[in-house]
Length: 315
Image (cartoon, rainbow, N blue to C red; front, side, top):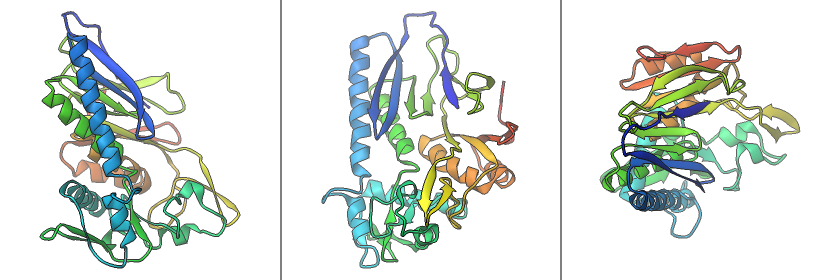
């Protein structure tokens, strides 16, 4: 579990905050400044951008680009707008990096509202993952088209949409003159600048089962932090109860890791990498993170043991 730690200011600047529900989750936007009216205008601009991203990535509505791509799976390529095309391209690169542990594709099972936690009795994990393969997404950069090769394939951005929205909101806030701030997107954090007393933003990291017992503080100014926590959610699949955390390739439950926190330069990348590392496992996950620049990880296993990637500074 993560929480931003703040220090009382010793100058005229203070931290202004606005909390509200966006993208189906709780967001808190914080900006450092000395003018309440200015801060309110900044909040309005950030909320408008997050709302725009939510609509952009929606798979519903006749004007939805994602809906058009999904509808034409196995039929024909669809021209995407530049923003969605770039997001899909980056997502496929992360899929390649994680050997498919991160994957924006899934099988609709005949119903686009279907998800692992809402499977009907006639669906199986095997059926749901059969066409979930990022390699079946064909991008044409020259034509800016996206083609899903297999009928029934779908793409969705549940795994990285909040992170992307946070990155976009940060960009808009910086255009508004916000030199220091924090965006908390449902527990995932994006920070820039420093606190009012010029100290860096820090994050308190705790075991999910002992949230009040902080074991580490990590400086995260100008970084993003995203966490994935193992929870025992159940889904009915062929009259059997299976844990709701699945490996993308096999469709069976994952255990041994209790939580993963990823620190990266963008919220989109941190958001996208957190769950795959949980699926990959501790050793392979840390090995992967250690090969990447400007990325770090803190992992807690099911015995409450803490593992960190190299060069991470935990106080």
